[in-house]
Length: 188
Image (cartoon, rainbow, N blue to C red; front, side):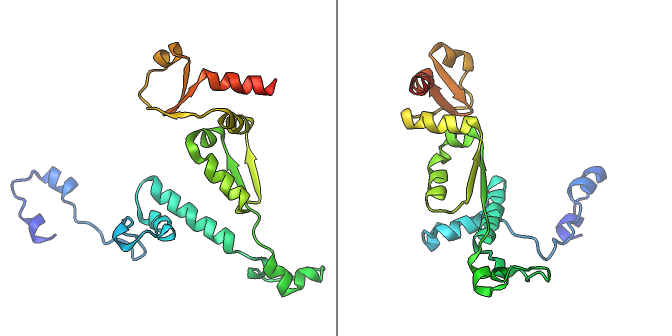
């Protein structure tokens, strides 16, 4: 124990054992929490990379960024040619270097509703993903947002009060009934 922990004679032993337990050393590969320092400039790549050392969901986002970077840089030439490969083109190093990863992006309707629609469009438009997989709700929400906007609300808004006003709540998003009517009119 450190000297500050040793001088806790006024603390009940049960509390001292639970709270003042000496820490074991952190593993050598443990990442220290550190956010992005904007004083170092506005660098989008560095900002995204910093999410891997930021807590809560940003950490998961950072892991996803690292995985996407691996997918974008992977080439078939990274893998050894299998002995059983009979296609001469698939044995050619230049051909293998030109074959990248096929990236499928799965999207649920709430992502379209929540404002990531523009990001998803960018990814598809610039061929960052090979295939978009979505639900019927995802397509519906995309078409609805072409016709009228959704609005940012609050998770705490009362559904019964909104209903009286003809407004629907999706999490903290607000969608007027009018949007659904515009979609149904367009569809028929």
